[in-house]
Length: 114
Image (tube, rainbow, N blue to C red; front, top):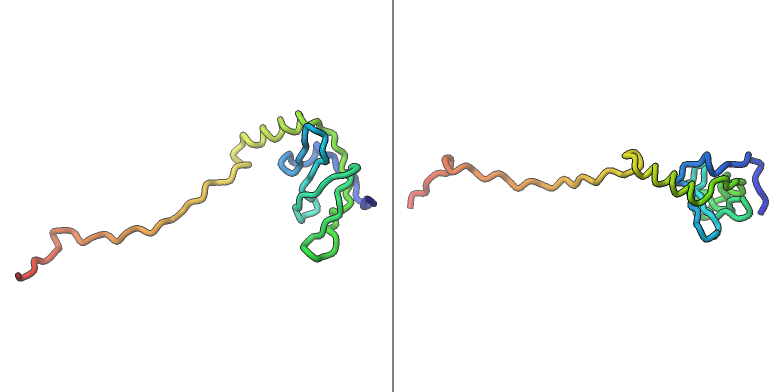
């Protein structure tokens, strides 16, 4: 894999939620920092080639070098700390339901002539 000429990214500078590490030593993954946000495998400290959009030319983030300078435990602790803050959580969706029509009050109902 040929790396791009961009400077090396340190995993410790990336937000913890844009990085995925495993305790078993499998290939780590990261969300592309160049803007497309796709999750890409990191092999030999280089992000794999990926298109910016389907069928397009490779993303400028392809070939980005990343140095994994955090352990799995450190990364998991950073992720737990982020999850505790309200900024990380999405708000619950508000579902507006139509209100049934208000019935006419009994005092305004006319008596039928029967």
